Image (tube, rainbow, N blue to C red):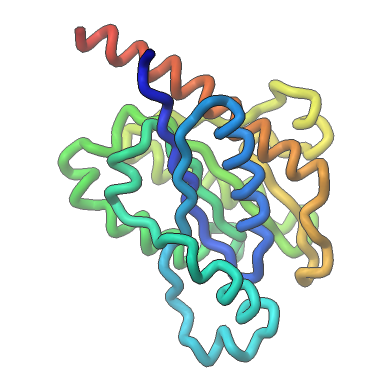
Length: 208
């Protein structure tokens, strides 16, 4: 038997919404037969800022045992699914900083030919979900990565309405991740595994 497709789900979440989406994506990928690593990126905000926000502090404590992402997680993976809340229509600085540290790997061509996908959350409707994912995918194009968005390829995507990736409107933290977003996340995980498995097999065949 061939080894399972390897998926790294790498995210930033301040108060937990993106983390909840990440868990649904992990569940979908694992059910599709993948070996999955869940990783958070390093926090950049000062401890006093986190402590001043009850939701932020609570989530930081809840996820203190989630391993911090490194470039090795990217090298290990056949597919990478990246999650971030929106910050003025763009990815959060914490995830962007992690991506910026990958320059040496990019320079060696080690980020290319992998499957990548993204997910996000906003406080308001039309608050930058699509622009955040499109901005994220700009980086993937520079990597030479293969963007696999969910598109409208499953009925759940007509319910969640975002072809670029799973997303959720969280309000001010008072709108928990709902069943539609969880189902969309699980579907995205399954779709990424299916495409990444095919890409992996095709690359192996062409190399052989």
